[in-house]
Length: 403
Image 1 (tube, one colour):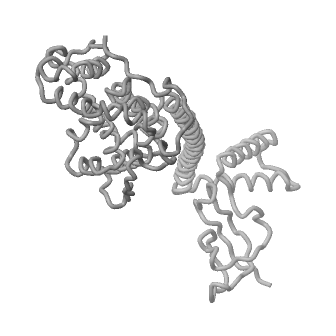
Image 2: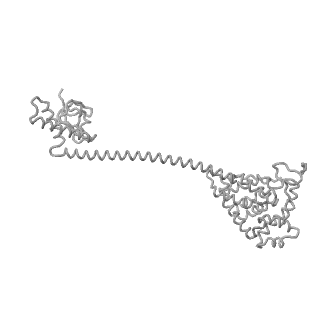
Image 3: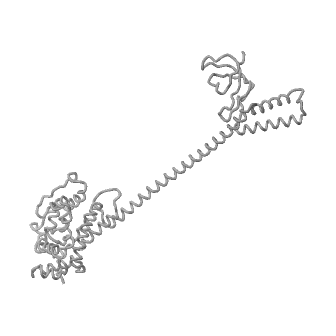
């Protein structure tokens, strides 16, 4: 069985010695962190700038911070780095052969411990591990922009895939160390240089698979809201927002459809009215265009019969026949009126003022000439005109009234 590494939290607690402790937030080797200005880099580099900034700010959480832990890790870090080199450069597909052939007897136990945790208790062969690592490295590079780019509608599916990649190498410190060590190998030159120049990245790799490195994946997810809980909460918020937006869109569409329906109804009514008026107008025009205008004859006959019925001598025909004809004519005139075929002016016996602007409606057949547009004359109706609605069929005939 591989030798179990001591957990720093299980070590006997002793009273701290100021000379053996490091001041909080002070880098172990007093290195100077370089502040990266995103505006100095192309847009595709911004996710990597965020990653490097995170490493520079947080690397002390992943390296030993006291003398005892440093001493323990000092004895193992070179072996850990050697383990990464051997599995990367060797094509053997047997862990025990790799250990026995590539490591000295003194290092074999430590190498066995490293590879045991690296391969999930040897459940993965070296070749399978290499293939999984290669796939995850390229997936990490492909998906990092979705995870570390701020936007209102993040692609949560891609982000979940990115989290799966992080979890794949975050089970043990050895897996995290191996992954971070090989990450530069799949990066473009510019981005690779940004990562390799990172103080945080250098310090993490310097100390090998430190036990504190195991929490790297979870802490990274918390920093950038990549935990399963954060993703579920964001998905719920997105769903609520989308439902609200959908409700608003549907409400607007319904209102637009109602308005469109009203507009179409009004248009249909207008078309229907116009069609009806056009048909009536054509009928009235046809009646009036005869050699003897029909409407005029009906109106004249009605007027004669009405006057005869009011005269003292009465009608020349039998009263019953005259009354029947008069009633028929009145019914006919009412029918015309219901079709909006009417005579004008309303009162044909009462004189009224006429100006030149009304000569389209009235035929001025007798009287002095209009001298200008403002000139008005007092006239009386000689014979009424006919119209359908506001459309003139025949103008009313008028003449000037002498004072």
